[in-house]
Image (cartoon, rainbow over all chains, first blue to last red; front, side):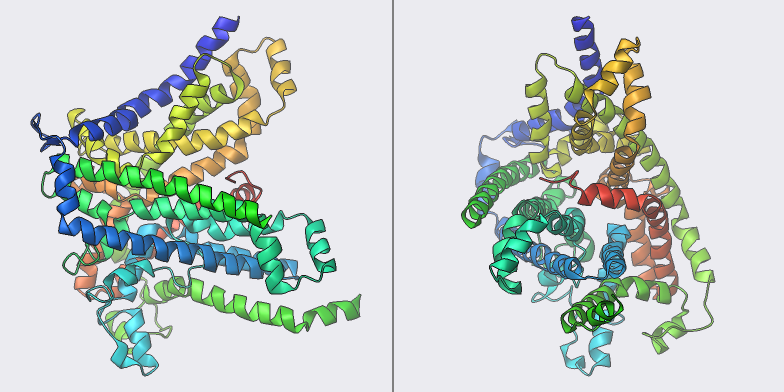
Length: 299
Length: 281
């Protein structure tokens, strides 16, 4: 009987693990292995030791990409932590229940727009002649501020970071930030607010002393999702600027893609992937720990 | 009561709250509004009344856009339907095993599963592409189904396992005592209780598939097979180049409709699952 059940369990997990071994575990191992090879994906490749890694640290484009992705992470983390939280807090305090529901639905509604449509829409908004942003600047008499937002060395990267204004409905994985914060605020026990009210905690102090620590786990979730998502994401840059002008908005993911699929440098691309994965692990570990200690210190 | 309600209505604090929220709502949905308005403009209306709603509406833009991207949408629907069915089937079996069975190596296998969360798609991109190439799946929609099935497993299993573990043991034991086999228990007892969570994971995976750009880009060179995210980029360049903004925006609306229809059909349960903490860290 028991062994029959065990057998059933193995049968149940078999399809999943078959798929994962073929298309996740094996490729991950293969990437690590081939990062030590000069490899075009067609022939067996030539073992080059750490040469790919050495080249990586000298590569100018990697330097630019690294700085850009850090700016990206800081920018998107700020946007995903602050604006959806602000909106969630405002909706949370709306006393009229039906209005609160309506705000929730309306502020969430942009997540139903497919992300590619959103990217292309923002590409249009930044369009040098017909774009919404430049037309708007003209309309309010700030025509001198017009520029080719995505074609300008000064602005291309920041234009991609800043898509999604007013940033209440996050982009990508963080698209649910607003709902998750709101859920967190709503699940704070009422007694805590009552106690805070007796203590005379007023709005802003209450926010930082009571509400923020109580939703620390939600903030942590969104921050980690944002960091991981942003480090990995390169489709926005790919679609909106192609990494340009020059390589001014290049990010590591896009450079990995180009190394492999435009230049057939599969070994080099694998080395980029390995380094990115290691950095991702470290960053996730640190952010998880530092936020844990923050929430412990606050509560 | 009446007086109280009135007082509440004129609470300056609440009024300020509503004012800020209305501004946020308007700004958040303005791009969608602009898209709808522009999608029925001809080129003359676009350039002469950029911000205004103009008449007559040029519904022909939609026909023009559909001719350009309809095929991409059909392809995406086929891939999404096949992938989501397989993802949910595989993940249900695995999640049920992890939630309700004890077997040798269970903890280790589950950790191995969770470890995949930390393996970014970036590192597996190149070797996975080569696996698909060696299996002869390039330029077939099957390649997309394969990567989505493997890509959707971890999170889906994680969510389903939590739900399955919360089903009262008595329900399952009762069925077992009645002589039901494990598969029968799963099909007759567990799945009927799981409709809402299954819908939630189906939506999450549909979103992932509808929005994916990279896999069709690297696996499909035949434009007839392209899915919507990939197809839209080419469509967008072509129509923007001709300043055919009306049909271009009509295309964006068309590309959004299937997803919007599917999600709003099931949004209520999705949001309540999300806010009730099914996805909490």
